[in-house]
Amino acid sequence: MNKNVPLTTLERFPDYLNYLRELNCAENEKIASGAIAQALGLGEVLVRKDLAYTSCVGKPRVGYVVCDLIAALERVLGCENKRNAVIVGAGGLGRALLSYGGFIKYGIDVVAAFDNDLDKCKTDVGGKPVLHIDELNEGIKKFNAELAVICVPTSAAQNICDKLVKSGIKGILTFAPVNLKVDESITVRYVDLAANLAILNSLM
Amino acid sequence: MNKNVPLTTLERFPDYLNYLRELNCAENEKIASGAIAQALGLGEVLVRKDLAYTSCVGKPRVGYVVCDLIAALERVLGCENKRNAVIVGAGGLGRALLSYGGFIKYGIDVVAAFDNDLDKCKTDVGGKPVLHIDELNEGIKKFNAELAVICVPTSAAQNICDKLVKSGIKGILTFAPVNLKVDESITVRYVDLAANLAILNSLM
DNA sequence: TAGATTGTTAATCGATTAACAATC
DNA sequence: TAGATTGTTAATCGATTAACAATC
Image (cartoon, rainbow over all chains, first blue to last red; front, side, top):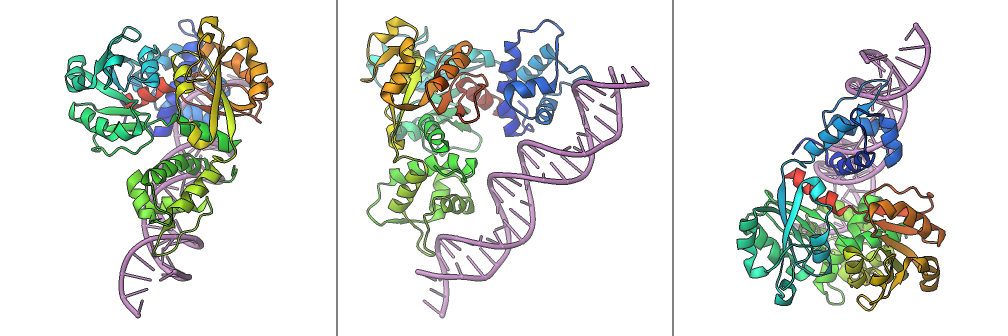
C-alpha cells in the first residue's frame, strides 16, 4: 500500500504484527520499542525507525499503544482491502496452502486451486474447489482473484505465469525455482523451499 | 561451508545452480557472466563478484566452464556432504515436504516426520515414515538427522524447537511465524508463507 | 592484433547503528 | 523534577554498481 516503505522494513512488518497480536492486549495497553526489539531479536532503534513508517507515533516515557500499532501495521500491509488469491498446481504443496487458514489474517482469501490432473479436481480441499487448468482464465475472473501462487513443476512455471498474467493477475508468489519473465507491472515474489534448507545447511 | 561468503551472495547461489543445471551442458561448454545475469535478472558485475566466492575462475573473452561452476557451487552449498533432515508436524505442509523430492539435489535427505496425532502416524508419506512425537529424540539419533523443519502450529513451535536442540539438531527451518529463542550455536531460518503473500499484496 | 570478458578498485547507494536532543 | 523513552541527525557498515586495467 505504501510504495515508499523500504522492502527490508516491509518484510519485518508481519513479524511485528504477529508478535503484537499474540499479546492479546487490553484497550490501551502500551509497549516500548525495546520490548519489541528483544522479543524479535532486533535493535531497538531499528524497531522505532520501522514503526515510524506506519505513521503510528509513540509517546516518550510511555511507548506505543499496542492496538494503534496493530491497526497501523494492518493498514500498511493492506489487511483491510480484502483480496482473493488462487493456487495453481494442486500437488502436496498446493493442497496444503489451499487448506491453510493463515492467509486470512492478512486479508487474503485463497479461493480455489487449479490443476491439469482431472483426478485432483474431484474433491474439495479445506472446503475450496480444485478446478481444471482449462478453467483458469474463467475462474480467475469469476473469483475476482488478483493474486496467484504457483505450485507447479519448474518446467511449467513460465507457461502458467504467462497465463496468469493474461487472466489479469497482478501479483505472483512462486515456489518454482526459476526466474519468471514478466512485464514489470506484475509483482513477483520467490520462495524456494529446497534452497532455504540448502542455505541453512551451508551456514552450519 | 564457507562462513565468509556474505549471506546475500549465499542466498543467490541456489539460483545460479538451478539455472546452470537447467542448461544441461556438454563437458566444457562455457558461459559468460552477462548471460547468467540476464537469465536471472541480476547485474553482471554482481554475478562475477558472487561467483568469485566459489573460487571458480573465469577466462577473459571466454567465460566460465559451466561444469566447473556447477561443481564449485555444489561444494560451497555443501551438496556433497550429505545430511539428513526430519520434519516435525505432519499436517498439510509437513506431509507435502516429506513427499517433495527437491531437497536431494542439495544433498539433503528428508528421512521422516513426527506428529503428536497417532492417526497421522499410520501411513507412510512418499515412502517416508511418520512417527509419533514421543519418538522424536530417539528417531533423530537413529536417523542421524542434523537438520529439522518445524511445521507445527505457532503455539507449539518454541517447545518443539527446544526438544530438537536437546536431541542434537544443529539447523532449524521453521514455518511458524514466531521468533525462536535458541542458543547461538544453532542456526535458524524463517519462512513465513502467509507473510510472503501479504508482502506481495502490499507491493501491488 | 583487436575486442570481448574477466577481476579489481573506487564510488555510490541503502540499511543499520550510534549519539543525542526533545518530551512526557 | 528526574528519568525513561521517543524521534532525529550523523556515523558506520555492507552490498551493489561503475570504471577500468588485465588478459586471453
